[in-house]
Image (tube, rainbow, N blue to C red):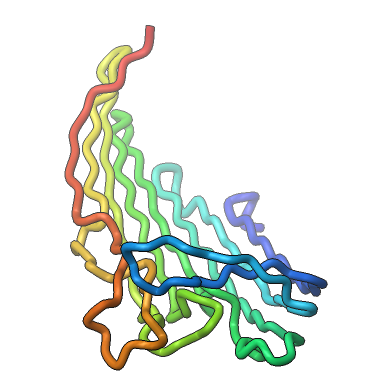
Length: 195
């Protein structure tokens, strides 16, 4: 489309599983790793992914990707998880990017990724629910002969949003819960050379 400057992609999917292996935390103490894998008789996932890449000008390209996902343990009697969502499966995810390259080959780019809320464990307990959030990164580079100078900032806004929340379902409060966080803002510069 648009003389080949716009590329669109669409993916639709439906997956039905028999005896899907699900991890269960046997000891919710974050200091003790003790998991057992059990088979759920039936589970399913379905959704769609939409993508667009646009060469807006000779120097500027833009991209966007959106994912929609539904997951469910459809049959697992007396397990306490029948009807639950699968772990770490956000219903909506998105990624946006831009890249600009000047005539002198100076290049700058940025990406932003979004995830809606999701449960950290198959038990879907509320304290293990990760809230929605964004992560943004920027980068720049400039070639000098056979050398490229580059700089980057990852997690630009220093998001402390967890990636995973390990919650004890038997505890009255969150005092003993654990969390895995995004890496903090990271700033770097470097030199890349070719021989």
